[in-house]
Every structure is written in structure tokens, then in C-alpha cells.
Image (cartoon, rainbow, N blue to C red; front, top):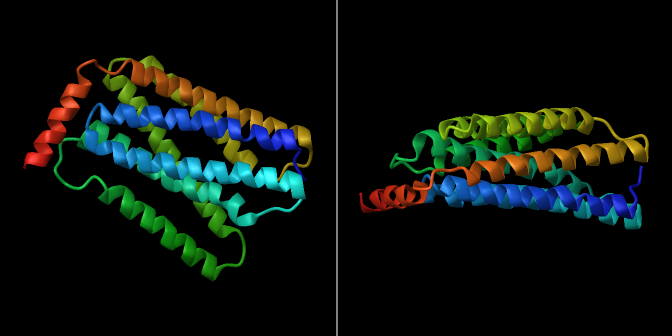
Length: 232
């Protein structure tokens, strides 16, 4: 089913909302350790690129009635990798920000494992098994990210913020189910995009509240932690 131009353009909305949310995550982890900001930034670039390519592909599809599959499929591949980097940055913000070891090792190894597995599955099976594997990785990495955001909200004594992330993830779960099947009508496709936008708005609210309520002295502590690491 070919989308309308308006529908295709609307697909950019959750991408831009997510860009705002991931920027807040970068600032939040940077308040615990400045070394974590590049990892989170890598996650932002991957997720934004995936969403932007997917939205652009839908615009091209609406204008030409021709799908560009590599752009369409890039969404879950890049998103899953981006979620791995974002979740890793949040993990270190919670538990590992004082360690000297490279904080790049964990997300890099997980990302490499995913890419190699996708290549292997694609070479052995002609179907869409690689897509369902990537969808599963994206789901698990997103779940980890939401859990770490929930735990971080409890760590700063604002547990109610965590419930916003629970609602957002509940919407994500519904979207995963919808993504497995094509849309038979435009109304169903609009419903999918509406759910996607609502989930993005809910996530943005949670990340904004979390960043807003981070302790005021966190930035000074992050500078001291980073300088201590660099001097050792």
C-alpha cells in the first residue's frame, strides 16, 4: 500500500522528537561522567540516521510508488545498534562511571556481534529471518535502555518519572507487534504512525523530567571523575 505525501511527511515527526529525547540522554549521562557523552552521541547518530532514512524512503515511495528496500530496512538495523550504545552509556552512568576500563568495549562488542550475526543469517537463509533477529535485538536493547532510565529515576529519588518510561515502553511493545505485518488500509497505517508519535512524546517527557531533576552538583562531580580518569 503506497502512503500519501502527508503520511510520509508525518513520519519525520517522531524522528525529530526522538532526536530531542536522545540529546537529553546525552546531557544526563554527561552529568555523571563526561566520558559517556561520546557513546550516547554515537547512539543518537545511529538512531536518528535510521529514522531519517526510513522517513525519507517513505516520501520517495509516496512520490514514485517505488520502495527503496535498503533505506526501509536500515531503520531496525541502525536503531538496534543505536539503542545498544545508548543503553551502554546509561549502564555506565548507573554502575560503571568510576572504572578506568574503556567504556567503548561493551557497546562495540555487542554491535559487532549483531552485525556479524545478521551477515551470517542473511547468507544462510533467503527469508526475513535476519529482520526478525534485528527486531529482537532492537526490542531487547530498547528494554535495557528503559530499565536503566527507570533505575536512574529511582536513584535520584524521583521514581514517578520511571512510570513515564513504563508507559512509553508499553507503546513500543504494541508497535513491535504492528511492525510485523503490513498495513492493509491507510487508516491502520495512520494508527501505527499515531502510536509511534505518542510513544516518542511519552519518551521525550520522561527524558526531559529526568534531566530536569538530576542533582545540581552532578556536573561538578562528572568533571572531577573525568579529570581523575585522565590523570591516572
